[in-house]
Length: 321
Length: 282
Image (cartoon, rainbow over all chains, first blue to last red; front, top):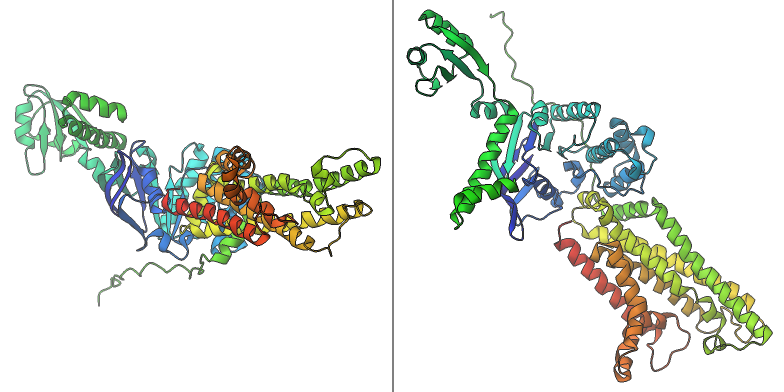
């Protein structure tokens, strides 16, 4: 369980994280999404106390991370891939971390086995490939058998096999009842494993939602219809929860709230000819882009009100995004 | 009776087997820092170099002295006043560099590699890491330094036994000087750790270390001599030398005063490092 309350981090003039409020619950995989530079890594660093919040707070399992007696047992974190000394072997790296908590050697060997590092455990970690380095980082994160597992961009630079391994690992950890928090800037990646989504842009919370709701909000599952008599079709389809859009006089309509099957049947019932009937699913990627683009423009206009013409404001913010 | 089995309320999520009670303690952090230090090759190489400097330079100095005295060649004043003790401490200047640099590496190396993130995630209270690093490396530098100067002295006293520089461990002040030199080298190691943690940069830490031990005394000698007398004895390097010098005059501190002044310098560096560690994001 991770609870952020008005979490804010400023670096001089720049606000990296801006009043974030969210809760990450146990038993599910929560995706932490946002474009590069949205403040995801900074937020994660604040969760494990590497960065101190400028204001606000973040608690892990009810307390600040540093207040726990055995922090590695509360949160296992994979931050940047290279949080190691390249001259130390993988085994010695893990053993040194284990010593701080009194974690036995058998557990070190267990996580080495779990991450498939047996054959390279004695080698210098500096010589590891990106994938091996990522596995070592995950081994360190799992070392304390933590209740919360937090991974920053875990599949970056991994081959398909590695990506699949991480995916299974994450769902497995959540099934065991742990809190799993995974950041990514790629929606498609997160959608495969996450049930819950926290979306940020420019340090602000844009959405705290589920994957299904996000798609629905973005106008997913609309049906595209082309007909000879759009006016009459509108009348026929009208009803509670049904929304129909289309330019006046145009043959095409966009219908939400009804399935393509229902529309086809109603049209046939009233003998309205249809030329085209197709379900248009909004991809998660599009939904995500819409969400973050809005945030960028919102900030752009805010900048605009401070004296510069609005258009300039938008352009600046786009280039910054 | 309904034939349908009564729907069972879902059992509360099966409790995972009781988790082991891990806990971070000061002794464990110390143990971790000990393991970290010895699991790097650079530690072995640099400590070996430090020991080599102490013994080899001590031996070379003694052989030089002996060959000049037997051949009757002219000796400059430093050599003319030499004793077995001063000859055996010839290598401390070089060994302090090796040990100080390794101290910087122990602390700043974590920042340059990114290891510090793992370290502080495991010990988020942070300060135990600094104390442990300083204690572990200080103790190791003390042991290596003390062993080195004793070996050098025993060898040198054998080499120059028949000359006017002859001295044995039983001579007044010799053991105190040798222990002082070992302690000095240990404290230089601690200072290195502190500078590394304070500056978070290997290059920066080494620069400040070398400057304060070797360059500043030279710069101070450019000051008017009335100022020099007030400043010079309190410089880290001169206070340190007072810890292991056999004879003391009005321009130098007593061994105890030298130790206290050098301890203050070390404590100041450690305090600076502690403040930075706690206040600044890692």
